Length: 316
Image (cartoon, rainbow, N blue to C red; front, side, top):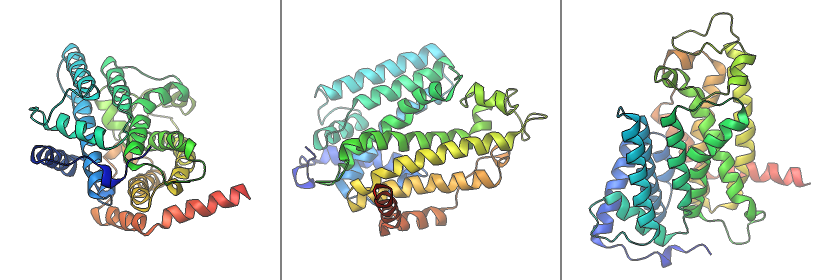
């Protein structure tokens, strides 16, 4: 059962301070995510900030410069903290504000905290330097680091009472997470290569003559880099199309949040498609005014109405 805002546990001063810390982390570090969660009512916005702050901590361990064995130890320490949160062992006087906020959020909303275990599993794959032969292999990783976040977020959003097909909402949230992660992978292809990481499937790289990798501002010699990018863009668009079926199942502000976050990434995808080699020259991003426009569009319900009409046509 999805709890209403009225049933959210009382927020004490220590918990408010913990949420404030998480919201500050989100505002400073979540350049795209923050635009979406601003559209949520306060209890949901706080819960999403707690989820982000915990996830950011996990990601930062994986992306840091520490030796691999130290990263593994810290990830396991973080998993232990999560186990304590799940068991109700984190009190308001705990010294870790992220743990305090996440524990409160998990009492307020039916958040499937196992998704954060999956995130830790995915970051451990990064630490091990795993590569992916096929798209099916890469999907396992994407579901850990992004699909799980979609399902965690759905625990905060909930679905509208009586929403048709709501039993598939976790599946759509997971798929939308895959779409966002594949967009990230395309955007960060050179940055990841410079860090010694390759995410795109080896089969796809070979198909387009890109197996040599991306360590410079130009594609590998004699490769069809644009063909590779357009191939992955089509895959991401298909994932977005499937994941967007979640939107009509959400209340207006939760739908606006999802539409804003996904809309920003879809526009990034548009830019990458128009100029594939831009991802080798630097990070592709949107100006703040364009992100704000996407957020307003989400709040207006344009994307949700568009998806609803398309779904009705398909059923007809």
